[in-house]
Image: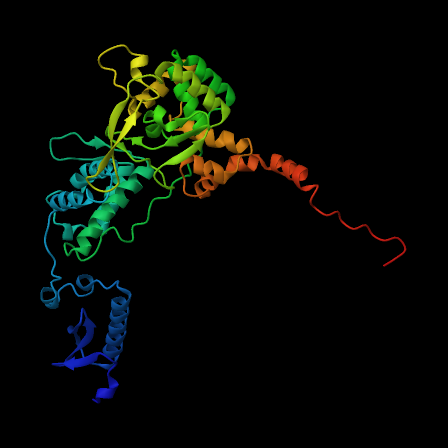
Length: 430
C-alpha cells in the first residue's frame, strides 16, 4: 500500500494505525489500536485533525482524549488520585487568596453541604455526571440519607440555591481537571435549572406609612426611611458613618460594607470602590433628625478589609445608627449587624400588619418609586451601585412601562418648541 494513501499524520505501526502530532514542543505518537484499512485511515485522519485544532485553540485535554496513553506519564499529565474531601480542602485554601472573606464563607457552606452528598472519601476521578444529576434532584425535592441508623435530612432548596451549589462545585471540579486529578469535569454539560424571574415586591405608600407608625423608636424610623430613600444595601446601611455624609452638598458616600460574618469590607458594587449617592430631600431630613441622636457620638477606628489578600485599612467611623441609642445595656454594640436589621424588619412589619416580604425589598422600593417618578434608569443604577443600567432594565422593566404615559407627556412639553411643524398642503397645487 502506497504511503500517499495515508492522511497527513496517520501511519502504519505493526499492522495497526497510529497518529502523530506536535504537543508542548514535542512530536507525539498515539497508537489507536485499530486495524489498518481504508475506513479506519479516514477516521484516524479526522481524529488527528480535531486533535491538532484543539491544541491550536488551547482546549486540548490530553488525559480526556487518550486516558490510557503511556505518554501521560512522559508529559507529566498522568491522573493523580485524590479524594473529594482533600480536593475541597486544597481548593478552599487556594481560594482564600482571590476572594473576599464573605465569598469564602459562602463557598465553605456549599462544600459542607455538597461533599457528604458526593462522598468525602470517594476518589474525584470516580465522580460521574449521573451522580451529580441525582444529587441535584435530591437537593431540590428529596431527602439525603447520611447513613444507616441516622435520620434522613429534608432539603427542598430553591432553584437559585441549587444552581449556586452546582456552579460553585463545578469550579472545584474544574480545578481538579486542570491539575490532573480528573480527566474531565463531570459538571460539564449540566445546564442550570430554569427558574421563574423574581419580581420586585416594593412597599406602596400606605404600607410605608404603616411601617413608620409601627416603629416604636425614632432611630428605627430613620433607619428604614433612609433605606427606602437611598436604596442602599443593608450591609452598607449599618456601616454608614457621619464621616460619609455631606448635608450641605446633599451627598452620602458609601465607603464600606458590613458582612454577615462580622467583617467590614469595601462596598459590594460593580461600579468601583466608593460611590456617591445624591440625596433626595426626605433622606436629608431623615439624616438631620438622626444627627440629634448620634452625630456627636464616639468615633471608632474600624478595620476595613481590602480586596487584596491580607491587606486592610482603617476608617474613622462615628456610626449613624447606633444600637446603644435604643438599648441601654452592655450587650449593645456601637453599630447594627445585617442580621439584626432583618430581625428588626420582621418585627416591625408584623406589628404594622403588612404582608411579609424580605427586608431587601426596601432596596427594590427605592428603585420602583424612583422609576415611577420618572427618574433616569442610568442615574438609578449609579445610585444603587450597578455598573450600568442593564440591571435596572431587566429587574424593574414593569415599573418603567407604567411610566410611559408620563414620559410621552414630558416629551410633548419639552420638544414642542424644537420639533418642526408638518408642512401644510398647498391649495391649488400638486
